[in-house]
Image 1 (cartoon, rainbow, N blue to C red):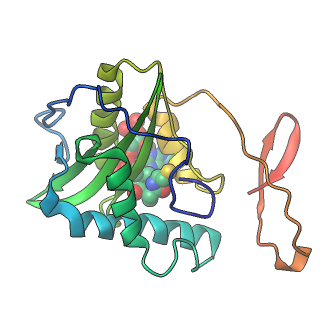
Image 2 (cartoon, helix red, strand yellow):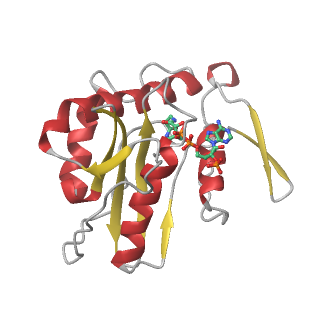
Length: 197
Ligand SMILES: CC(C)(COP(=O)(O)OP(=O)(O)OC[C@H]1O[C@@H](n2cnc3c(N)ncnc32)[C@H](O)[C@@H]1OP(=O)(O)O)[C@@H](O)C(=O)NCCC(=O)NCCS
């Protein structure tokens, strides 16, 4: 997710000549069944996208993130990646998680990954992400990126546990607003320099 928005990278584009992966639950004892997105999942996935936005509103203390109908940004994502690049996690017959893959030439981006609040920390995000990552591997890309916002430490730790241990490009912000209108918090040290997040 890009900072402060739920909008996907303008760089990204669909790659159509990739075979559609056929995937089923990762393990018999998996915490949820992972299956491809189906049109009947639309409303639930909009709600999950809204939960993803809500999480960012909370961590950035900014209720304007995602606009007035954040769930609709899922539709934009669906148009961009196509249903074959989206997976849902189903638990007891209910969709409780969503993962997507944006395929570019040579590289993929795992976006989004979200698990329903109240069911996080049970391993559902991992199995969802692993299915998407396996699809990326099969498509032949060399790498997969994720772009969590800098303040989303929980997600960064989650991705690190999944194996994302290379720090790629970093986006730095020069905020022109007066200090009293800035809401940044003390954050990270990178290259021996202090950064707010
Ligand atoms: C990030 C998110 C998708 C993770 O899904 P989850 O189901 O809670 O994660 P899991 O239970 O599958 O955890 C997978 C691994 O990450 C680790 N992990 C998950 N949450 C963690 C946390 N808060 N702190 C440290 N590690 C964490 C787990 O320990 C686990 O490691 P292990 O499998 O090696 O034991 C989920 O918390 C979520 O929806 N968050 C809000 C939306 C969001 O921020 N999405 C990412 C946007 S870029």
